[in-house]
Length: 149
Image 1 (tube, rainbow, N blue to C red):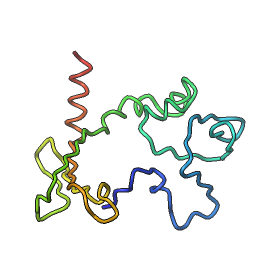
Image 2: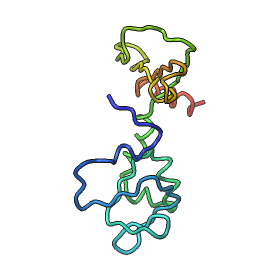
Image 3: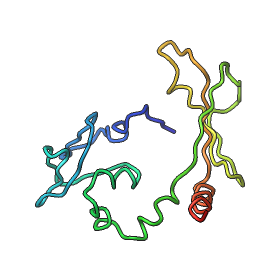
Image 4: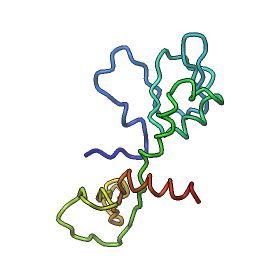
């Protein structure tokens, strides 16, 4: 189980990337298709593009209507169903639990994860942090209930 520090570039730091150009650590404010390539921030030109972002954030980067041209409607309609609700809890001292990761069955909660390594200082000091995450079904039900009100 790998949880990258708050940097999406950690997902694309692959060892074997012959022929690939990576733009990591650079803020992307716009993406557009121009002739036969993608233009990032109006200056960096690439032939292929991978955006590891939720649809709402991708939509904000593209010109209005572009995403609808790229993806089928059913994909866009179902995107929120992949969402989950997550909460983080910090404790001043260790809970001394005998596990760091637990998958929960038959519950709206699907995952409990000790995420302390991302929040502790260089000396390992700091609070113990746990992340609790719901199932996608529970999150979708909540979203549907919210939109029907």
